[in-house]
Length: 293
Image 1 (cartoon, one colour):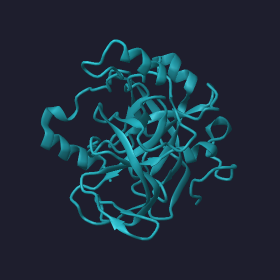
Image 2 (spheres, one colour):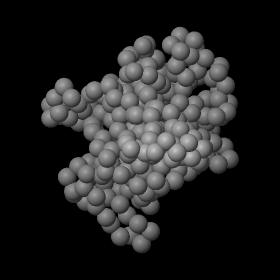
Image 3 (tube, helix red, strand yellow):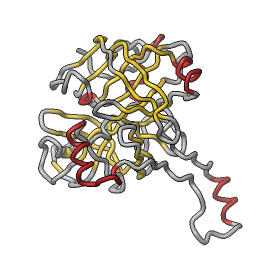
Image 4 (tube, one colour):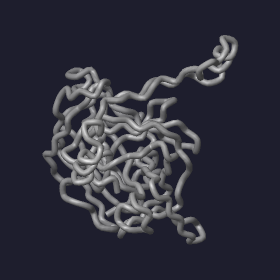
């Protein structure tokens, strides 16, 4: 896993003050030397991507996260914060364990587009959390989406409802480090095994996304749509096979592949049908694929 607090401190020692620069993804543009004639045709074929910023991301005490909403969310619904299951204040959920509707008073620092903290958000409960099949947590806040927008001028990030595709340009936006990582979706992993945990249909990044401890829980944002397609969670640090901090890939035939230095995320479209009226988690809702207690 992209270790929470301890890993973040280690990265700070290794990287020094350069570990947490405020960096936003560059807007899509023409390659150097592209002709004036080529530019209009390219822009007509593919809409220009918006620059990914930190607006809507949050910093936890030990991880990263983001304020997210489903497409059907109402402005008056309690806002939700997305992070990893291994970032829960109660510790790592065991295999098969699901945390549901547990009281929480955890706080989150809300960031604006440039990465500056603009306010503190507070949880009322852990709406959902697990490390089985996926690695995610959802906190329900004491504030509504409208209250956050009125107070800070920041809108929640929208969750994508469809499976992402390989080759998609993405940005991992870490609220903890105030740092972004840009790369593509390299592909998908049938099973990703790390220590005691197994995750399904995980996102594998191309090598450019060298995420570090503290980036756990960061939203993975589709550069073209600005929507959240996954939540960053782990990477193989030293080439070991299927150990803690060294996940391995297992295909449909049981063949194991180790990719040292490659990082991963867990898709989020499967949880969208589970978010019902008033931001309530309904694991029995049609299309909901999250594990149940």
